Length: 134
Image (cartoon, rainbow, N blue to C red):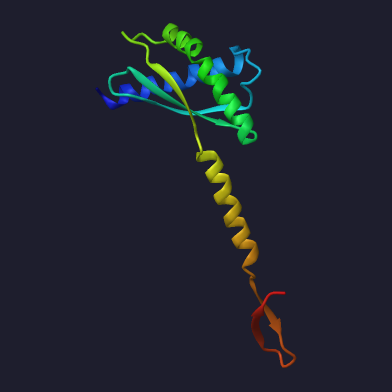
């Protein structure tokens, strides 16, 4: 199948899933969810919806349980929007990419804070000399 068609279907799945989760799900377990991307199998039978969930690991697991429970409802909303012969069965996957990028940013900032910039110190005879920062 053409890759641009798969990309369009994946984008529709991402849009429908995010709108449904944000505006229509009434499950109190499902909160703080961001749909980051969707991947569709080449035969359009299966789709993975990657979600980022804010909160503790226990809250994330509880939210994933709620999302798995609501997968059929999201799939029903998707069937109303897609005009394909089959509606892909949805599987929600926790996306660790956002968490990893935050951790990498923290490590970079920590490394930059530890490296001391060199400063120019003026000596009494008028020449300048580089020394380590305070």
